Amino acid sequence: MRKALIIITAAGALSACGSETNVAQYGDEPNLPKQETGLLPAMAIAKPTGWGDAVPTVPAGYTITPLATDLKIPRQMLVLPNGDVLVAEGMGGSAPALRPKDIIAGFIKSRGKSDVKGGNQLTLLRDADGDGRAELKTVFLSGLNAPYGLALVNNTLFVANQDSLMWYPYTTGQTKMTVPGTKLTDLPAYINHHWTKALAASLDGTKLYVGIGSNSNATERGMPAESNRAMVWEVDAATGMHRPFATGLRNPSALAVHPQSGELWAAVNERDELGANLVPDYLTSVREGGFYGWPYSYWGNNIDPRVRPQDPKKVAASIRPDYSLGSHLSPLGLSFANAAMGPEFAQGVFVGQHGSWNRKNFAGYKVVYVPFNGPRPTGADPVDFVTGFLTKDGKARGRPAGVTVDPRGALLVADDLSNTVWRVAPTRPVTAPAPAATATPPPAG
Amino acid sequence: MTTAYSRTLPTPLHSILLAFPAVLFTSAVLTDIAYLNTAEMQWSNFSAWLIAGGLFMGAIVLLWAIISFFTNRARTASRGPLVYLLLLAAMWVIGFINVLLHSRDAGYSVTPTALVLSIVVAVLALAAAWTGYSGFVRREAR
Image (tube, rainbow over all chains, first blue to last red; front, side, top):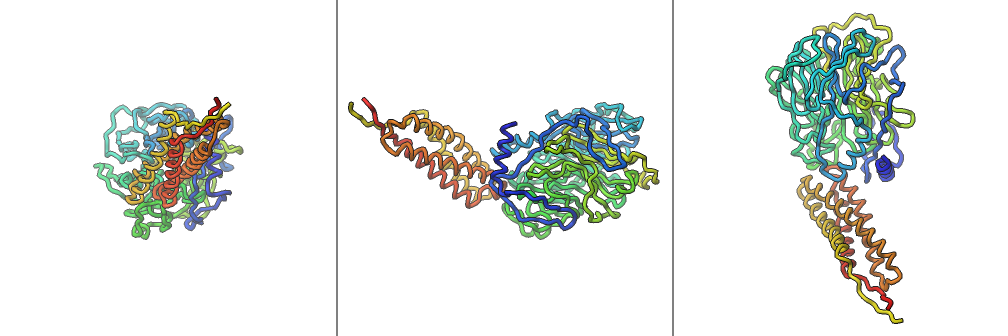
């Protein structure tokens, strides 16, 4: 521990930015400061500490409860038709250290993570009496390989492992998967620097979208390692045939389909080591055939000079994302709201922000709500929805990863540091009429 | 009492250790050039490891040289040990800055600046080796 602190202190002393400013970078025109490349990247890790009797902070009129605790690295969730919740637990990635730096940086980052071993399983949670605490917590499906994305289409459960997309027949109410799954398709898994495989289903259920992160920060593992990476695949749910749907998305670690427009949206982790306020992570609608810049450029045509060889044509073709969330906050969760969440949070998207390492002042470590007007963000700043994950002295009680809206009117938050699933619900249930989208599959993790 | 002078050569173990920075730092110059010519990341990775290896072994040599400098101070009859120590120290400090440069990502790992530093460090390592292997003249009290 002491060694880590010394390294972090040294990193701070040697990094280019003497004093670090926090630039508000929200919306479609974020302020993009000059690139900073010092001798050492700024690193700050929030040391883990327990929740004790504390719980995360939620807006007035909402109540938060731990739906389940003592999970094994909960990352993403899926609400089943009867209200049961599946939690994907696991930690993937076994990318070998290619450089001396990888060993040191890996050690420092590990100080901010839970030391519980990933479960490689799905756990089922059932809160039959509706008190926000699950009475039943049971292993639904084990022996998986770092499961992450989950989706249910009619009676088929899709599970995205870090190396394969599997499907299982599911009957409402079942608490254990008894049949072995069938592989729909392999997923890119070579190196797996960014291992998470986010998953969302189209509204008609015929297509699945898989988020596949890059194999490096900025191509430092070489261009060949980036084949089939930094993109969203469209997979045919019946045949497993797939194609790149959109590319240049560095790490699309959360996907969700807009419940009315049917458009695919992604939360994307952008690149590091260009400064405390570069590059903003973003929320964007994902256009078919679109190229979003990585690795050649960011936020449209801002060139990343580290990439060899450069590609001016790709830079010129780069799409500017829809909405900047801010730099380094690491969005890992994305879920569209509904009327049952209450009038102030009825039309927009919740974003789980795992939190920063590549800046001295922490960013993220909370769940925000980005207001939408119909199919697009209004452009207003994000609203804090769940906070309190950091203590005043800069320790982390938890780190939010996946977020999932329960159609009955609650937001589930997977906290992969305290190994808890939190449930945030209006204290008095909203009596507004349920949205008309009852025929559509529930939102995917 | 007469004073005799003799040339003290480094011990075999010190000689073996001293060979590492000389070889590793000079090799890094070549892998740097290979990266700049090809943009093949593996050359840059080689450079980072070679420099890190040179620093690791160089740190042992430097520590040994510091201890030897102070313990043999009374018998030292030339500037050799001081020059040797300063060359090793400069090699190590600039080498450390260089490994940080080489730890940046992709095209920022081996820049023209980094290559210049690699050359400077290699020259310092070779000069230190030359000085060290030449041995030091010491006074021997009889």
